[in-house]
Length: 412
Image (cartoon, rainbow, N blue to C red):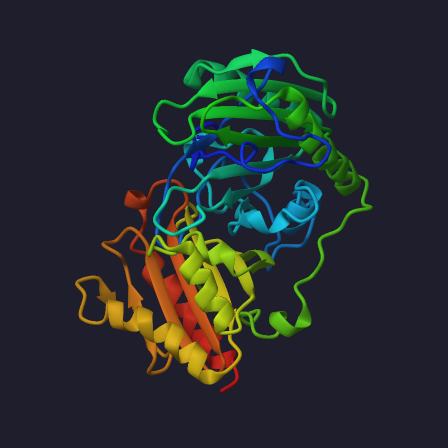
């Protein structure tokens, strides 16, 4: 599943804007590559796409040993490191996915010695809602207990790309300690079937950067230009000169309290993201309208946390904070969800989360509870990390527990 998970959501980024030092690539010629782990288009309500699973991040209770998921997230590239000046706003970041400490995994497909894994996707949305997303770029990092395990995993991923996806290895300049460039055509993605991937390894870390385009593969030198800085950040992570930054105090004090996961599962990662991260996964299919509404309400920067689920480690739990500018905005945002859920077949007991709250299982495939309190609106979700149809009923209690603890801690 490490290979399959990155094929969710294949679209093209590089065809749409020029990356630093690259200009406009015409693809094809210079040995492009496509390193896969599942990247098929997947629009799930309020859920982030999943790719290569793993195990080990910033848990709340276990002692911190080695790199955690928050550290790996800090090493991933950000739009300003990739796009030409002035084009950064065209890159929208989704919320990440993390697997850590044996949580949020696909048990049948965890690489030997794997300790932590993170994945993030960027998208270039259509100029108007209703049209297809114009492009995507994906990154992932995997951390292993020893270099031998990382070497074996890198080799396995490259081979699986070829065996499972008929990927072709193409020439390209080495990145890190070892690397491979691949291209493949994804027949299941009509919009952007041309996938180019660069897989690389630096010590105990295995990385990947991948693009998808509508009509041609990206050039190897384009992928190298992006992967080089990513590999450099990975080296800084390994030598201790790069560290994860804490969530700003203004948001951290509003996130679920430290005991929120008690009885549910450990905290795996905590970050911030701009409003478009939620807009991209909102079930309405109108990302620009959703982002505009959030920004109008004052929620320009969102808080996000990932938890494990003790009752079923294949499930992924998230908590998202929408800090609004006033009470009316928070209530207006939550009320839309409440009205949608009210009286529906999947409606659940939202527990002690106030009068403006609702909880649904979305047919048993995606548990989500939203509430508003004071100037803040929230969303707590739980689903299977790989297949929504394998979402566990055990999600219900975990979501409710985190929500109740969070509600109790927020100011009126």
